[in-house]
Length: 195
Length: 434
Image 1 (tube, each protein chain N blue to C red):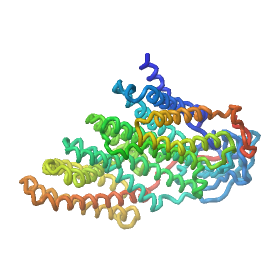
Image 2 (image 1 turned 180 degrees about the vertical axis):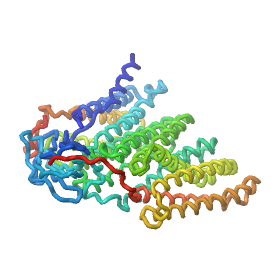
Image 3 (image 1 turned 60 degrees about the vertical axis):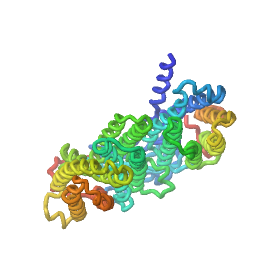
Image 4 (image 1 turned 90 degrees about the vertical axis):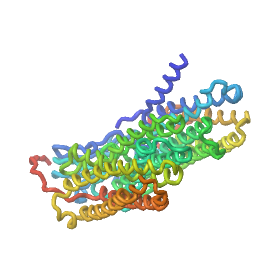
């Protein structure tokens, strides 16, 4: 029953999300045409998203100490897999309907909703509550950027915004530290710091 | 070098630990399902953080529901809640706990232990009422999902080896629906089982500790393993579609077959009196053959018939041969398991389990008669290439599949029911100190 601290898992996934963001940022900086000169590059971020979704299931089955976290992790796992799979299908030419471009915005929205629903404390209750709200709203509001990218795939601003969303999420996940003085222990009702 | 760095990153991500959020149980005394030789003086729960204790934070009850615990209090270590116990007699005990987590949420859980006897799984603890109708329906959904997945893959690999693009797309849609449903319905089934064991209102169930059910029961272990297994199948199926690699379909099919055994390794065939590796194997064969048969019928009716008219004749004849083998396996394994679970013929009408089995046997007989009509009446016409038979055969195949689905519903109720108890084996007496 001994479990490692949550932040270790969050940091591992933060690394994955950061890589996703860096791949996308590189594409936004050099332009889609230059990025696609190597045939494997278009597959890079969707494959990575799909892989992260698959790995998220490991967290889901390992973390059964509360129902809501098990369900939230399964929602994030499925959202990542859906976004990755749809983008891979589009890149490969297996999916033709432009509606599939909306799979990633949908995954963003579902992920954000899962963050907001599973955190029932207010923003300043404690650090984890603050981060859950911040990530939830970043994902929900960021959906508009992802929709813009889906509707206008060539727009550099939308591509850059999409990349920055991932990088911002990675920073938030890296900020999940129980001992960090940055956000401290904000509400006396939350009791003593855990460690 | 670049490859090495990428490989290192992938490996680092492949080894995640476990996330924490609310107060999480670090340890309990007695441990989950621990069998003690001597009665304990108290029961304790230790969390990863300090919690607020209620007077009834921990309650311990006998199998009959008698309360044997006193007032709960925080121990010297503020992370631990302790409750004194009255002198306990030999028997099984249920512990229910609840505490206010540092984040303001009430966390709760359950576990069992035994004094001089083996502890029951938490799903059979005092207060748990057993499977409900909702669980029957959910288990039926799980069987249907397995049939769509296993039967679809088996049909595609063994029967319809070449399909036109439209039919190929429909095949992937049905198999994909099967694997997604297996994951979603599996989660729902697990949460429903936990809800019954924990006996908590929905709001508190969200923060209920599922660890004792996930790790302390065969059902929970099977759920965890099957979830990961079907995630792997989902990945393989997706890659098979994306890359058009048949070998990945074989990998998905064999993985599905292997992980379907989770049901056999956690159900009646694994835990009831008389259970052995033979009963588990028979159960797995019974389930797998039924899924292959029903899923194959659905593929034939929904994929080949409407979308691959040139393949109808060959697919029907091939499936007809395979169905003969599958039916033989279903009947042989089913008869063996029935004899094992119902030693007396009169159990069939005297026991609730027997009556459901009788209903299932009736439905199976109907399905077999329908299949026999296909085999002995329709098949010769198809072999002769008589095109007039194809149109009515489509509806007839769907009819047979509908009966097959009804059989699975009866099977779902049967799995959630308890076979009649057998004569108890004499056991060695255990002396217990109070």
